[in-house]
Length: 326
Image (cartoon, rainbow, N blue to C red; front, side):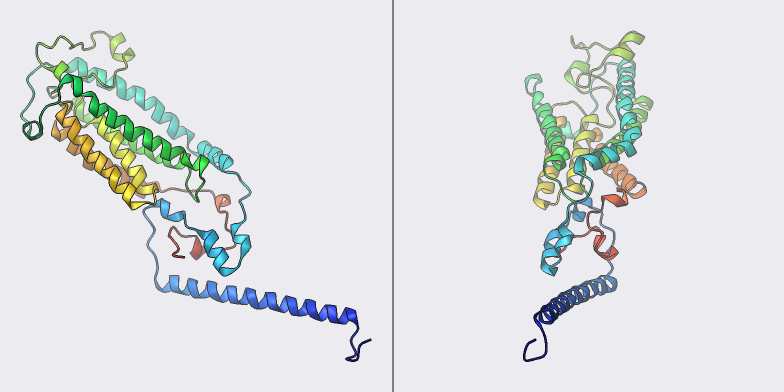
C-alpha cells in the first residue's frame, strides 16, 4: 500500500490503461486522417486510370506516414502463385494465340501463292527515303528484335522485381488478345487485295522469288521474313507497336515511354527504306493497332481476384488505380 492508497499492481494497471489510451488516441488520429483523405477523394472523384501502372502506388510509404505498420504486411499468396492463378484464368486465350500464329503463317503462304511479280507501286516514302541495299536490310530486323527482346525483359520483370498489380500473365494476355485481333484484320486485308511486293526478291526477274506451289508448301512452310503479297498491314509493325503499347500502359516512367515511341517511328522509316513495305502498310498499322488496343482495354479491362489485394485494411477509396504523392 502506497501513500496514495494504491498498491504496485494498481499502478501497473494504471500505466496499462494509460498506454491503451495512448494507442486509442493514435488510432483515432489515423481514422481522422483516413476520413480527411476519403472526403477529399469524394469531393474530387478520380476517373478510372487508363494506365494500370498507376496502381503500383507506394502504399507502404503511405502506411508509414500514417504510422500503421500492418499496411506493409506481405500477402498470403506469393507472386508465383498469383501468376499461376492468372494463367489458369487466361490459358484459353494464350492457347488460341499460339494456334493463331500458325493460321497467320498459312494465310501469308496463300498470299505468296496468289502474288504476281510486278514493279512496285508509286510510294511517297520511297521517293523521300533512300533505299537500303540487300546487305543493309538487316538493320530493320535488328531494330525489330531489339524492341521485342526489351519488351520481353519488361514482361518478365515482375518475377524479379514484384510491383503491385503488375503481373507477367496479365500484361502478356493483353498483348496476345490484341495481337490475335490485329492479325485477323491483317489476314482479311491482304487476302482481299493483292499488291505487288516492293521487296527485292518480289520484283520481276528476281532469282530469289520462290512462292509455294503445293499444299504441302502452303501448310508446312514457315517464313516470316521472305514472303510476298502479305502487305497491308505490316506484321512487324504490329509487334513493334504492341511492344510500345505494353510499355505505355504498364511502365511508370514517362521518358521510357517516349523513347519507345521514338523507336516505333524510327523502325517504320527503316522498313520503308528497306523496301519491305509500302508507307501505307506502316501507317495503317500505326493507327489500327492502338485502336484495337483501346477497344480491347475498354471491353476487357485488367481484372484481378479479390484475394490478390495485399492491403485489405485500406478503405475502398484507397484501392483505386492512382498514385499517392508522398
